[in-house]
Length: 181
Image (cartoon, rainbow, N blue to C red; front, side, top):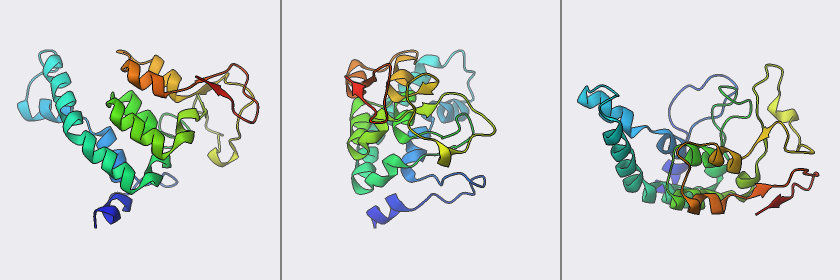
């Protein structure tokens, strides 16, 4: 029953052409601090430290659940969401985990379930005429974004353990997609 729940798309009506969200996506995107601020009715200036504490507590409590979901339904680690919203190809769960500051255990479980996600090269800018089905592996990293770059551009940066899991691409990437560590 739990395995079936992990595989079931969440009930919602995504925009036409976008991918359904699975429980993993909702957990990775959940902003516990925003919900805490709403329930407290406090302003954002006085609660930045409590927001960080709330997020850390939520992530610590939810980490075993996220890891278990990925174990039961590893295919969810390769499912993109929010295509065309900020980026044409959308976001992989690995990107969500990195950009939202999830602990190393979550990032490691997602990479283990979908190793290609750590080497994913996506177009950096959104273009109206872009068709994700026509995207081919680029010849260089110019104009692309990848998980390691996303992590290095974050402020504050993720833990060193997370960065060690993410490979660095070489400057020129032939179709074999070489990444250096």
